[in-house]
Image (tube, rainbow, N blue to C red):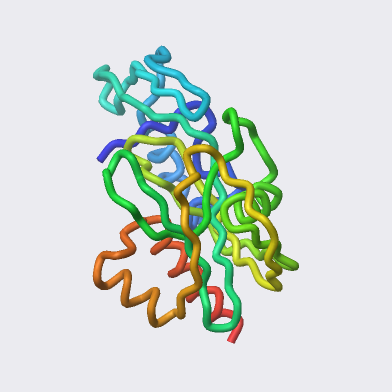
Amino acid sequence: MDVVLPRDHGAHRFGVALRGERRAPAEQTRFRHHGRMKQISSRAVYTNPWMTVREDGVRRADGSEGIYGVVDKPDYALVIPLDGDRLHLVEQFRYPLGLRRWEFPQGTAPDRLDMEATELAARELREETGLRAAELVELGTLDVAPGLSSQRGRVFLATGLTQGEHDRELEEQDMRAAWFTRAEFEKMVASAEITDAQSIAAYTLLLLHERQQS
């Protein structure tokens, strides 16, 4: 599948190089540079305080032209609150699905503002759960849906947790929060009680982080 790299939403948005980029042969570098689509026009189709939908005119590698729809949303932070063997999750109604879903606390800054990633992670954790973390460790980066959206997220592990009051947004007023053991979390994934792709991918990053630390 061809993927538009709009504006500067490329591999270096979070300072992360493409795998093998430093050692890539000159031929591969030229192919990557000239083989991608190029944006030749852009217009906003719809905008609200959370996102912009735009339609780009693009020129493909063979010189043919077409259009590409892109959903621009600000980068988000996802937080894995961990206390021993327990994980803290939130559950809320996800309107596009028409379903309530359990997932890790996550979100973007209000009004599409740019916010430093660690600050955003602490804000989302406090807002949705009331928890405060003594330590936030970044685990990695996730792309939400690279075929249609420019949004990317950073995953943080939160430890040294203390409980306080939450400060949820209006859309989160029916949110619930609860602790689950790892075994319960994995069972919920297997039984499709947890289907949020970002949460499942974040848990994989946690497992990889722990393997590297052992």
